[in-house]
Length: 610
Image (cartoon, rainbow, N blue to C red):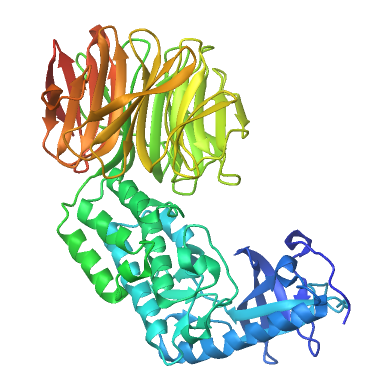
């Protein structure tokens, strides 16, 4: 056998053929349909003698997955992978007959690399052939903006498949359950689980380790496949369907709970989903069918109707305050001022599937909105016009500020490198992007210091709070930080308040003479889910969104009596600004609904926004 030579997926062209040594032109490749780390997937066709056409999904394994081990030739490596794939094919065949919705491979063969008809070469690679399934994977289906009830329906059907393969006579473990490997027919609603390339019986013991970031259970990253690990992956898929984001690999349970709560899901739903992402296999639910039924019941007890999941607040050059909110109808705005109608008006031109929004004003005083949608696309809008600004990690947050020159700067996590990325949008719409920041898990907040330098509060890959200022990066503390706010005190010195997951304590930091120092802790009335702050002439106002309501404290000193309660409802998101006549205004989401509060001489008045 000829030794392998590297080849790339881009070298393959429609019309090329693949097949085994007896029939090298059996499958005609029609179109690339994606692929993952293990290979490229193509739609292929074959014909019978009567002219009947059949469609197939052909996976072409990437060369790096066939690299030889120690004292192993390339040919031996190919043979080893072929035998493993054949074993998986046999196990999957048994399960396919028992469990509806299982769509595994029907053939595995070694053959010449993709080639023009009649021109097979000597170099061989490995192919996995599966029946073609009409429909879309869950990453594409999510762009249709399914309702919670539709997500529950898909979850119930997928739960039956995952439980079914674990309970089958083969007792199979899939090991690669992810949104890309779940297909749904939008017309019939049929759900199918595909790509059993890495499937093994539970009795097989340690196997080759794989990792699909966000969806692979901690214990499975070391090669320990199990039914509990598949249930973790299932939980990651459900989390993705509810948020458009993959789970964080580190501290997945607490992070997913916090993100679901911030997205206005009831705490009961958030806890139910997060339980599947427990780091301990023993703590995960054992029956996915029962879990899916309970999820639907929790959803049935949740009030229906228009619900909002994120918002931001900005004050333009005319001192007019605008709320920009995201809901199940898309993006909406409400202007707050004399003669304004306190109602959220949908933006017909806005992004269709937004998950996070942040707003500021540019040097001309115009409001600028940045949005990340479910697909990780960044859009920025100004004066009714929207533009594509690239890609970002959808679940990694977003912060925006106006720079000292009047341009607008946005900070995100680059999805390809997991590093802090900066976009600078000039008044003329020119976008400059730099991905040279530190490695980061999430962006929390940003402000401008007295020198005009942007200060960005981020979470490091280890869960620590970091402040990034230009090329400088300061680690402020350990622990799983899930919310932070930054602003300047009356002396022009930057301050930062950070909330830990499931804690009432807010860690406070202050920059003095260029150095960040801890200044103590502030005890909030309840467990803080989000924190916001704003500096003004007579001090700092701190706002805490908690499960038992929204609380405000002016010049907090840690005493409980300094806090004023503005709402008794469960509050998920809050933003605060200095509005007209130097009065403070805040906007918040409580139980999925938006309300605004205005301060006047130390007293607050609240108004719901329809």
